[in-house]
Length: 338
Ligand code: KG4
Image (cartoon, rainbow, N blue to C red; front, side):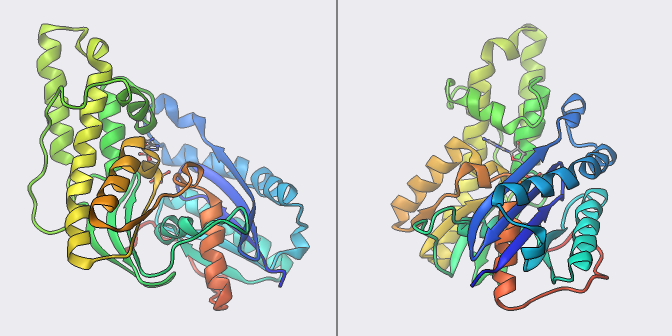
């Protein structure tokens, strides 16, 4: 066997390309876009322009690092959606043009499936992977979902956010604290030094397995506003405690529904995915919960938690085994259920 898949990811603000040969990752190149930092969030038009600048050098570098000639590729997998349409168009068009030029098959990938399947990325033959079925907590800048993963293609969402995603809660609260974008990693770093019980923020009370983070965001904002009236230095003086208390509340909300889901569905394994799964507190909490419920946790390597093409190539690898290819006329999509 010598099947080589090139993966291309351009759904938001990371341009990435990766190469997988016979299921093993050979390269994973990511160009993150710094241009958005000044705006405190991703500016879609700037993201799409930066993808145009980055895509060719990123793909060339991924092939170079893998030691693979483009004529040896077996197929190209690309993120078709969901994401920012202008960003997706760049990766989609590039993948189509390259596949057409090389006369090889195209594989369309659902970005959320790719996050779930990131658990299967192997850098060494000895790397272990979970077996199906399992439960995944997918937590990123755009999604917070609990998913039953029956196979690489068959996934069922059993709970999801009805408003903001967990990553948005991290980023928006960090923004009102004056921290740079994206705020999640800054909150994570500050939280390590702070007291998680110092401040209390609102937790949602909604039925079932769905999430909500908008109330927490408002409650965090009001705490800052009320305290800043008396002490203009309030944020600076309490930065670590605010971050730790915010992080603890987000984790409590996430774990509450994950525990309910695990007790209802009895999964053998729980995996996590998406940018927020890089969070130290989230990783510890998932391990603790799994230990309590006698479930095996599978935590992805941190480098595969945020947007990357290795997970797209991995999802492509699964589809390649079933010769599940797509037509060149398929357009990208901005929104989708899993
Ligand atoms: O999956 P991802 O790269 O893409 C989007 O969905 O856009 O996730 C990005 C999100 C951002 O909200 C970012 O703040 C969050 O992941 N994030 C973190 C950490 N690292 C990234 N949140 C909390 N703690 C972290 N260490």
